[in-house]
Amino acid sequence: MFVQTTTSPPLRAPASADGIRPRAALVSIEGFPFAVQSSAGAERTARRIAQRALATRDFLHRVVGVGPRLSLRVLDRKDWLRYADDDWYGAPHVSHDGELIFGTEQADEWDDVSDYLVRRMPARELARLVAVHGVDARNRRGPSLDRFAESRVAHDVARLLIAQQRIVCPSRWLEEAFASYVLVAVLGATDPSGLRLVG
Image (cartoon, rainbow, N blue to C red; front, side):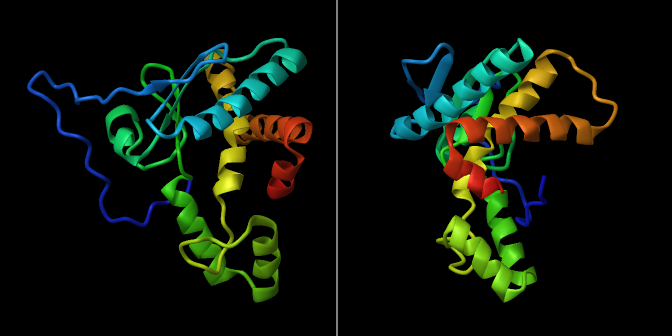
């Protein structure tokens, strides 16, 4: 995980007297064999992310014989303060109640990555990367990593399976290697253009 450059974490919505943060209603997205909720206005993004999660779950069932139990929330910045357990906006994670949480936009940390690549990559290599990913709308020089970040849903679903099955990997890189294999295999089967972003 990349280090956030902001000096202080964002503030959460204030708690009420009973210690519970107020919650706005999320929108339920129908048509999936697991619960999917999103912030109002983010239904299209939630469907796209849920479809990626479903493809990954089905792949895992087919290849390893078991898939994770899924429920999903896709949150805009306002709802992130109410429903997410990770302070940094957009960082995919599993909430305390077992739901996969994604942002409607790429995690803020990916902006830091694009900025880093602008500062450190030779111009020719940077241009090749931008040709594949597109130009970042914020810094206008580095690669836009939003599509790449979203393609990593498969990686997060694979890691959820490891956690739910209580699989203990002798080293972290084995867990990451498994999740990365699942990512590549699922993208190869369902999203070849996304696979190009990873490659």
